[in-house]
Image 1: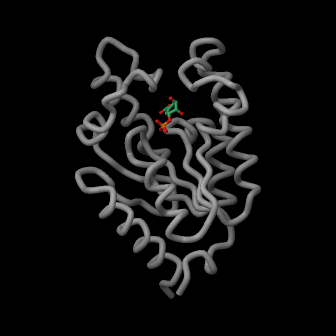
Image 2: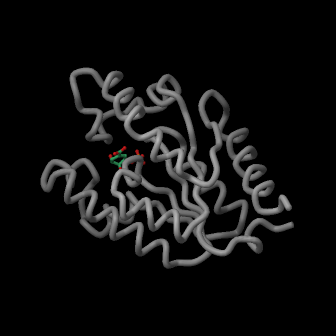
Image 3: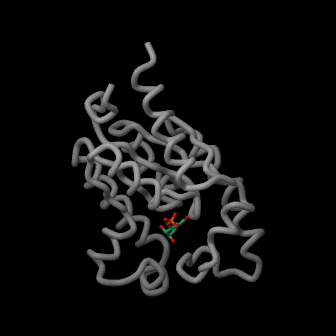
Length: 179
Ligand code: S3P
């Protein structure tokens, strides 16, 4: 009843910034004995710049292109856990590749939980607006239908990281071993 032996490809975590993708992704990979990859970290390593600097110097479009290439590259790695940036699913090719090649999980959190976790708006260029709360609401409204295309959904708002990780593992297990 090992999750990793039932997998046929990567597990990809999608969802809004602050939904716990990187933290839970690392924990999940450790629990399953798989490699963990964070697409933002890889983009930063390749560019030699932070995500915020890439947005500032080259703009969002270029970032999305680099993000698409990085996610496509990671999807070739076979069984592993991949955490994506919150906007990865807004690039149709990225979303379709995730749908085709991975078991995807939407880590879903409401705006209150997200804002509480994102003390450091500074590292999230899309929230550098006069009203980050409204921006977050608008982004969520636009993106929820895209996140909802993931194979599975796990609520991560309002509970401890430990509880969310257990729920994520249970959801994967039920999905892989039901029927
Ligand atoms: C973004 C989310 C960020 C990062 C970039 C854009 C977004 O990743 O990719 O700032 O569009 O929501 P996290 O979801 O890991 O914060």
